[in-house]
Image (tube, rainbow, N blue to C red; front, side):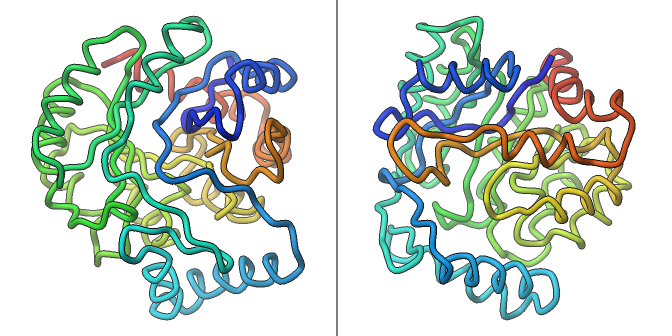
Length: 288
């Protein structure tokens, strides 16, 4: 069974019906949904954009101080700044959108309860959503919400106690990928976008951490980055995800096939691909 562990629900970009249509075309049985992080944004497919993306990846991989500096400047004053455009970041995640999607299509959707520890009573709200059918874990975004990884201590303790995974989009805070696994050794941590922005350092670290995983979501990545991540980490620590509908060019037109190809094209046996495409994630949430 193929399961997308990382997708945002935002019907200003992609309706649930179109999402399911795309899932069916790519044989994706279930998708784990996250509340939108920012205003509606459609991608502009341009030569300049591709050059900027490639430069960013090169700097992250080869010259991290410069890459991190660019990465940090993407978020300022409550806005996500990308390719000359600015998009308001939602400080308070709307988890109700995820709950309603699950209510409508309970056989197709799972849910992450998104948390922002800077907001009072955020923990209490997340715990209420986790009691609702279909919710399987917590999503945190230190990068866009701009807080130290230590602010997630109460969230991490709760997730560890409940045995549920915590999905995190990291900021560039130094060694932040080490903090939670070392403070909460039984916590199941998934670092989004293959561990952006640390990538190779994080992969090397995670090989010796039994409860640390990465997902393959987002246009931050490329087939070669995914291939390298799987080579370093092994197929049992990598989870398939898309990060849609971000990366779309126009309303209701999302291409699931591109992210599928990143896994399908790996030079590993099919049974190993099956773990990346769904078995690893289902084991994580079935044991919670």
